[in-house]
Length: 605
Ligand code: F6R
Image (cartoon, rainbow, N blue to C red; front, side, top):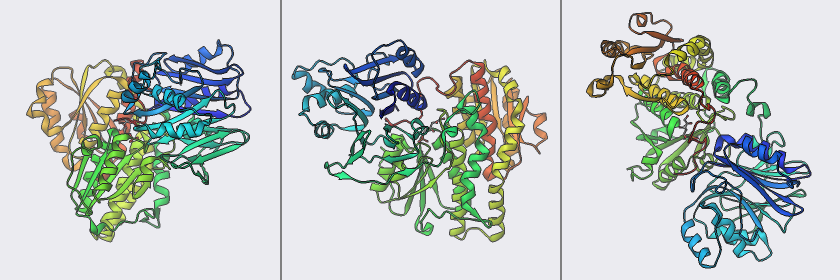
């Protein structure tokens, strides 16, 4: 939810921290701050707003010279996003500064205790209790005091700490929030994720829950929850800085939309050999399961809605799909005959992690579909299938979502074959269809060149409907979410056949209805729903396969996509809708990569 960074080396810390924070800004962007070890002790600047505001403030602030510091970009949970609540927070005695990502659930109780001891708090945040407690426990040994402090914390945290009396050292601790150590040459780092460090180092160590660590110029030390030093081999990151930059596009979102053919290909390539699907990373006896439960949040949940229909159709196993925030508190009836599939781009979504734990506790086998190697979800699940989408920076997911879909498609065909539900001919045909998806995604992008023009006529619509049936409906949900989250237009996704049971009352002249018509077998049914809304004056924008000529007699505008087998059409059909959301948001002057009130990685409930 927030991004944190720590640096120690021989370069000026301020530019390193500001640059790292720029790359972490997708995680939260309502305020930002840095603290530096200087000759005069710890110096801190912070401000509401984005990292650019902080950079402007740093440029006119004197006394920030130093080679060791910490930084933070925030998505507020406790206290409004103002200058005071921005991180870092300093202990009342000025000895410690801290940045934190996560939530301290027992902060009120800890705060009351400390206030009784006469400690005066400056902010409304939960974070400040950590730094005040650390100062209270301080006995001359920072790490020992830090371990004592974190033992009192309930909740989640990734923290980085500076001590005025310990120049050149940054301390850190982690519990249920991501934190990596970056190993440089003559410099070392902490960060919430690799995008902040990739231009300095590709060698990282993922801290585990309960661990603390120290970085100095001379090296890195990691300690387990009992304080014993542990040794860990770093992992080497394969992608480079270009993947985390805009590469000439005005927004990350547009870049990531355009990268989808390559992301799909990268996800597919290692898994299809000689016309057969190989999920070498998965060891599952599919015959053991009598049902599958898919759980996730937001767009990943929408991917799950597609997955349900594809898996059920091919494997003939009952599949349920549920948002993780509901599933985790439902006390669902699941057992060792259930396969729980969690889907998460970031691998750090708090509700999805909780749902995964719930599934494990109840004895289910768990499989994660995840984009971030070493993330909490990837570590927790029994099995992981990675989506090789590369880093996704824009808050609104695009390539993350389509790669989740293609993994679900691969899994469905792989599992159906394992279960003996597919004859060779059908299996071969399905594999061929999946293999064609990356090039069809490219064709869908090529066919969508007119979306920008359409957005000009639609961007002022006040409320829209996305309708579709079956897989088209699952895609409608994602298309509607994309538009809402980045353009702030209200829209709703409806099962096309359900509209007439009430919501059709909202259809009036000029209302825009986006009708998804890629499920060939259901086209005639959706066409009659289009007629119903047209009869009430709606404008209809249809998304339909190139071969569908009839649609021109039904809809006002048509966005064409390449013809694709019904089961796999969501991968292609979403592409013009992502572009529609993008161009409408552009027309409306919205901050596309960082929509208001959102953050990329939702590590709170
Ligand atoms: C929407 C979006 C969110 C995420 C959701 C889950 O564009 O990005 O709805 O899909 O927050 O995130 P992950 O996949 O990281 O678990």
